[in-house]
Length: 101
Image (cartoon, rainbow, N blue to C red; front, side):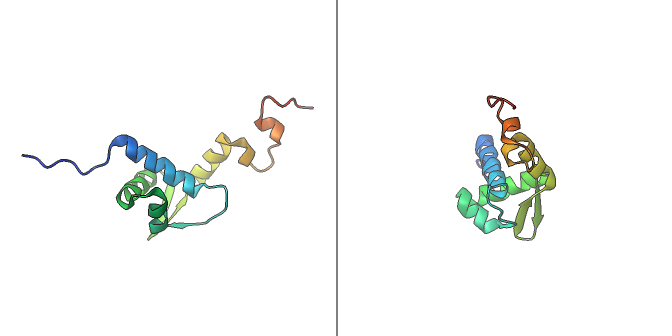
């Protein structure tokens, strides 16, 4: 009889990856996060480490020992998908309902 897999459900892993990435891209400048800090925020240390490994493999997170931070590519993608966060972009450009004057 085979043992049951200890891997998390795919949706749980995707949710953890999103949680970790949003923490790393958070609104307040934080700098590198310690992996233990991220694990406390996510609530599951094993799932957090799997999420970090997946994000690292995707090129969205740099890992330096016990520290993690978002890559430039992740930061730029976040800026492009959230125009209000991009320096120099007027709010009118980010909100199509506001007429340009």
